[in-house]
Length: 328
Image 1 (cartoon, rainbow, N blue to C red):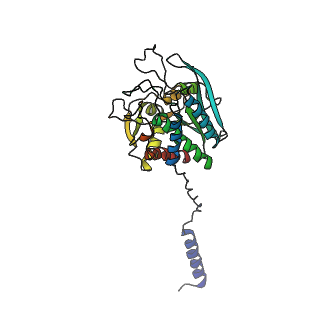
Image 2 (image 1 turned 90 degrees about the vertical axis):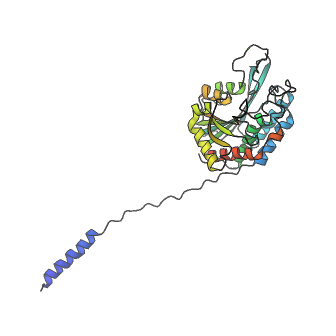
Image 3 (image 1 turned 30 degrees about the vertical axis):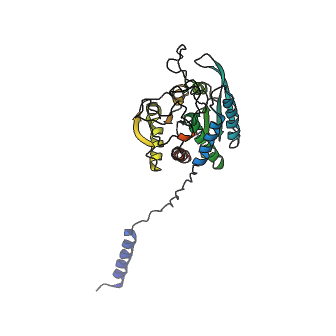
């Protein structure tokens, strides 16, 4: 038999033991709910109409009447979406000895932000149809080669004005990209005769000490059944950007446009942006391994007109870029 003192002592030990053996609960910090990023919906009809407007001016060859009128329209169009629009002018001489004043057209969004991405395209069209069988000395309309990239970027500008991205954006339209020296031109060989606007801007950016985290160039992004591959210069200078964009496109269901295959290097505006100003820049450009030129059948011909522009292709490129920009 246990007396009352002993029973009280044992009872206290049991209670104490129960208290000390109970596991300590960790203070849990409430998890922050994931914020779903609302990405705008690209309007391919709108982009298509912007291409049509450019084509309606006629061939946008530097110093031509169509070129002058299109430059005025582009500046006014961007001013509808941002007050920060510049037209960068510079004297230039083309391979044929002609003197011109090129115009690079720049629209900036949130210019005060240091975290920036640059989007590029060229707005001029080819002054000759050197890959056609007829009228080779006449300029082409350039609906796809020039017009499509510009059309997509104007539509992006419209979206940026409605919903401001977290990062700063610069849209830069280069002039005189397509006034390069053709083979057997009869003129002395001119080094770096292509991409005159991007060469000038890369040496003389629109803003002192300008830099962007990366750049994306659009060239021939509206053709029917177009495919885009990992172009070699893009892969060398901006492999991580290339992978980011192609993976976004794949997740959005555009894998039939953005192909995970390597392609040969293409001399385009991004070469000079990469090598002169040092902004890692990729080129989203149609690449067809089945053709001799590796471009589409209507490249640098009079068939580069609105009949070859496909809204599905425009949508694949435009929606992918919106996804990239708004999730930065």
